[in-house]
Length: 52
Image: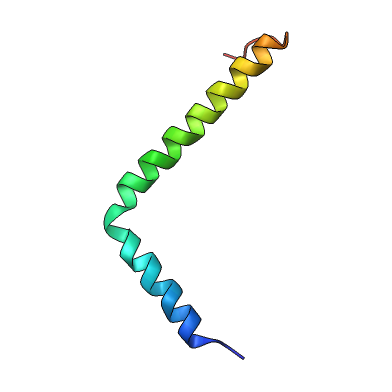
């Protein structure tokens, strides 16, 4: 019913990322803010009012 080897591989992968969690989180939020800024600029160019 459960594939324990796959589950153990997933756990090992997640554990390998733990030391870099702060860096990954910072890059994620940087990418998220960059995407939101790009979409805001695009909508402003299309004539929508800017959102504060």
